[in-house]
Every structure is written in structure tokens, then in C-alpha cells.
Length: 545
Image (cartoon, rainbow, N blue to C red; front, top):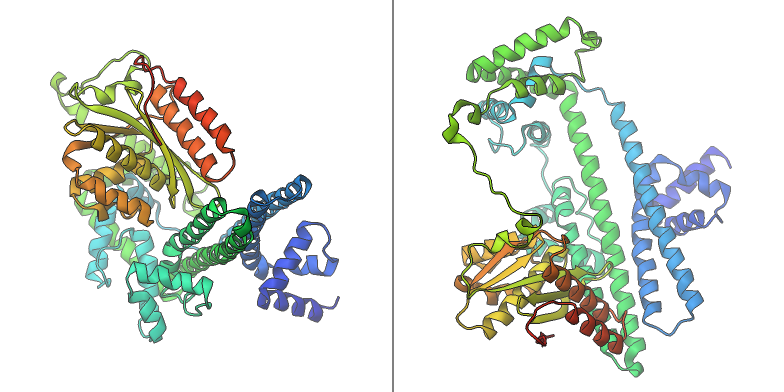
């Protein structure tokens, strides 16, 4: 194959997604022509190959799920599962290859090395140095004045100044200025109807990457609902429902590929921003900002600055990398200074000692979280389990007196699934115990924080960062009305707590039943076995399924 022919093949793969995907899968299966395999090694195709495999991975999972829900021969199901594992492995390898390629590219980017004193000061007292840099940037009229992270802020500043005179197209401004819900809807239309050519624009790509996972979650939500329809349908309607499940997987495959594309484009944008900030006139301007910030730091922290200068001067006398500016030494030097600084506890007398609590083994995990509760409080543990491909989830909960419940719902994340378990358990127990305080324990920090945030604010929308789907949001709306009678606390998971282990088992059973992976008769037997394992000491158990 000539160079021109190879170039033409590379361009063909770059322009034709289907052809690229077929070639990548052929290479994965060992049936790829040598000239095609050589073309696929070109660096310009590293990103597109990831997108092709991300798309193929979702489709492979969809083929497996359809086979599981259909009467296909076991051997065919086995082959489909093998293929799905191969695609997942190939996608992981493509990710690694792309990261290695980027590392090599960045290694060749010449970046100026700040002075050793500046780097040590920035590490040993990041908050103080950051404030000095903010003040300097304000004086130089940084657009928003206070970047969240000065290092990233400098690159953004340089990039913004470079792009000041660029007029954005109206569709780009619309994507940039719309609210989050409208933006996610635009991403869904991009996947399901027509590709939006303005999403890759530099002014939009960061927002695209930030919301791409939410759009992907809505694709998985459609899969979960389609799965439910298949499982609930009579055999005469199953084929139609399976076709709808295929459609949901097709849409989600596009969303998965576009999610990867957004991440790759954002990474490429940030690399260009860093390169812009490290070269030419902007590099000199940024060096001036940092040097001026260091002068401010010296005035604000004179004793610390004296220590920094003294230590770096001694270090240079014996450092083998002194000629290169000691590029790798600043963190070790900062550690020396940090360890040498006195803490507030060193300055007090014995009255400043921190109190300690000693509990017997296991007691701190099992009972310390309940020590301040009234005897009338109803205490339950909730847990949840989330499916791999769709958003189907199972939840379970159990009370100290042996009352238990479980069910299934739809959740975008494990945190949202745990919130559903907490809310469902709390609402059920509030109805059963009209005057008692209801306390829910959960081993998910994210879920506990989300529920408590909404309860303390008396506003269910305060938890919307975790809660994406209507099922969880409706439950939170109902729970907030009873905020004065509900408490939610964190419990360390999987440390032998009987109620926690039982709630986990009920959640996993509920998920298996929701996905049709356990027969109803077997599910009932498993449920009975789980409930018998609870050592309530109070006779038979009440079940609220």
C-alpha cells in the first residue's frame, strides 16, 4: 500500500464511523487486513476508536440482554457474552493507548519552570499563595476576579484574552446560556434525532462534558423502563417490547459515544489552553503574575517566607538538579517546612487536649450512632443495589423489631438508589408509627448527605444534584413534609451489622427479581431465608414488599 493509499484509508475511517467501527471490531477478532490494521495505528484515530468501541460496547450489552430475555439457545447467549467482554476489554485498551499518546505529547511540550522558592511557597501554604495570586490577578483585571483554582485560572485567563474578539454563532450562545435541563434535552436530541454540530465548540464543550453523563443516565433510564415493559408483557407482545428495548440500547450507544467525545474534546481544549499559557507573550505575562504574587506572599507571611528562602538556599548547595532549577524538589522541601510548623494544639496546656471515647470492638460501628436516641425511636437500616447497564435498582430495609421491606425502582447512580431506599423505608415507617421518631441508617455517605441537605433546607430540590429521575424526586418531596420526625445517619457498611447485611441481601434480591434473573418461586424462597436470618427475638417478621 502506498503512502497516498494509506492516507486515504485513514481519512476514510475518520469520516465514516460505521466503517471505522467495523474495522476496529475486525481487528479485535483477528480478521483484519494488514493494511487496515496499519491504518488504525495512526495517532489521529486514537480518539475515534474509543468512540467506536464505546458505542459497540453498549450494543453488545444490549444484544446480551435481549438474548437473556428471549428463548435463545444457551450456546448463542454464551457467544454474545464472550463478545461483550472482548469489546469491553478492547475499549479499555483503547483508553489506555490514548492516555499514553497524550502523555507523550505533553512530555514534548516545553513548560517554563517556576523558581524553587515560588513552588515551595505554593505547596507549603496553598491558601495564602492563592489569595496573593488572586489579588494580583484582580489588579490585572481578570474577568471574574476570583478563579476557583489559580493554576487553572491563569490558563483560562490567557485563553479568554486570546478569544476576546471572537464572535460566537447564535446557536453556540443559545447552548451556552440555556438552563441545565434545556441543555440536557439538547444532548438527548443530539443523540436521538440529529447530531448538533455546535456542541464541540470551545465555548460549549466544557458544559457538554459536565452534562453528558446526565444525558447518558436518561438513556439508561429508557433501557430500564423498556426492560420493565418486556418483563411485564405477555408472550404475545414480547417481541414488540424487545424491539423497543433494542431502540433504547441504540440511543444509549450514541449517548455513550458522545459522552466519550465530550471528554476527549475537553481534554484537548485544556491541553491547548495550557500550551497557550506556556508559550509566547502569555507565558511571560503569567510568569510576571506569579512572581508578583510571590512578592505579596513575602509581605503577608514574612516568617514563613524567611524559612522558605533559608531552606531553598541550603538545598541548592547540594542538589544534583540545581542547574535545571530543581524541578522535582519542591514537594519534599515543603514537607520539611510543614512538619516543622507548630500546630494550635502544641500551644495550649492540658486543658486543650481532645476528648477520647473508648468502645469495645464492634460497639462503635453498631451502636454509637444510636446512643442519643429516645427509647421510642424506630430505627431501620436501608440499602440498595444498582444494575450494570440499565437504571433498574433494588432496595431493602429492615427494622430492629424485624419489620422489613424491599422493592425496585429506577436510579441514575448508587447514591440515588440509596436515597430511594431511605425515603421508601422512612415513609412506610412514618405511616406505621404515627408519633415516633423514625431514624434511618445507611452506609452511603452521598445518600445520607443528600437526604439531610433536603431535610435541613426543607427543600427537596436541595438534593437534585444526586436525584435525577422523577421516582426519587417524588419520594423526596413526600419525605420533606415529615422532616421534623425523620433523622438519617451514616452507618459503616459490611462490618457484620446484622440489619445492614439483611437490608443489603433484600436489595440484591429485589434487583434480581426486577431484572428477571430469578424466578418468582425462587425469589419467595430466598426472601423467606433472608428474613429467617434476622435474630429479632420477637417471633414472626412483618414484611412490606
